[in-house]
Amino acid sequence: MNIGQVAERTNLPAKTIRYYEDIGLVKPMRTENGYRAFRDTDLHKLTFLGRARALGFSIEDCRALLALYEDQSRASADVKRLATEHLVEIESKITTLQIMHDTLSTLVKSCAGDDRPDCPILKGLSSKEEIHRKNND
Image: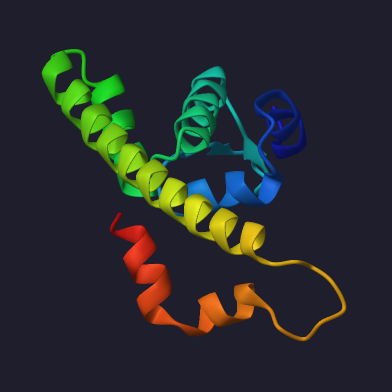
């Protein structure tokens, strides 16, 4: 398969596939004229990487997960540890996003949104105290 076919089948841009090759995550064969020739194993790895990246795993986590996937003597505990660590990161981001949402929601609700120049949103954004205090509630 050429890069266009692989891109279509994996829903990854060709640029991403080239990047994954550049950093050594996939190593397609090369034809005599230098074109990439992807095998089914490359397609599978790229699909794996696409799904892992869609779940927010870093490139280094993907590298580790791919190595574990290919290691038939792996311990599932190692895979679970990586996934659990990532889940903790996601939960932390969700908490941070919820705080941001709550703070911004409070600021938006406090603004009349009329023709007057007074704007509680701008006041809130200019005051570290206000946003910090709401984030700690």
